[in-house]
Length: 319
Ligand code: ADP
Ligand code: TRP
Image (cartoon, rainbow, N blue to C red; front, top):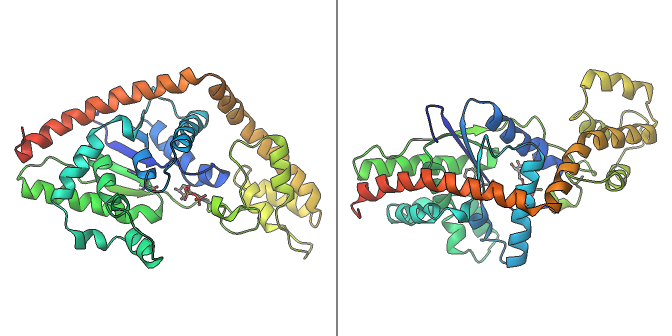
């Protein structure tokens, strides 16, 4: 499977209702990179990472399936990408344990995510503390050369690199490849309906597979100032789906006419989203498509990761 092209690995936690910020800020770029033909891509649902915060079986099952359907609906093709669930591939947690054995607590205590959690005075689970080691396993199992992530995940890639280096040094074998982060350009810090960054935690989202009614409701609620000029919050979302120079003249012609501009945005979003929503609905009606995709992904990911684990077990001397 991992032929001569560099390997790309990317994980996504199934923790939120997806919105167009997730799509323009992450999913679209992941899928485009995976489809570019330049890499051997692995994309997986990081359900064991999500377990740290999502501890409800029904919710885990539902959100995992929704995330898989979402990626398929926005164009991920399981024939081109090894697309799987982390928990379907036991090597991830097995390798995590091996990394635990060569990693010190002070080193993990320097992680931003841990420090943030601690600063908030949370009761931190061992899983949260150990998050970077499971992530290192996710990445190193497949000999990833690049890992597309948002800026906030950069340190985690450094942890994976350090861990690869440390393992190779201790066991005197070049078992692991050192991965590079690919920081997805923030072409789109997509603002929400209130002008702040669109985020599920701010309740300002436009859902990714919104119906016409949902779109209307969300767009009509976009906050506009009363200066009579260009409604920036409307424009910022509009330019994600329409050429900016074309929009400039449309917005000039309709200066002050917020209603007309919002109606145009609803129409354009609807045209953009409808094919993806139709695909999503189709996947919802026929669960066998998701099942088949996950079965294929599980088999491929298990084969690649098991081969790597044999090298690892040999290197550490348990085999
Ligand atoms: P949320 O902020 O809604 O909780 P997540 O933190 O789950 O979203 O983000 C998942 C991915 O989507 C990340 O890679 C993040 O960078 C991207 N993303 C989320 N919101 C936005 C946004 N408003 N603009 C651009 N990218 C975003
Ligand atoms: N920590 C990542 C996030 O919160 C998700 C993730 C888990 C991941 N394992 C990964 C990303 C491996 C890239 C590679 O977004």
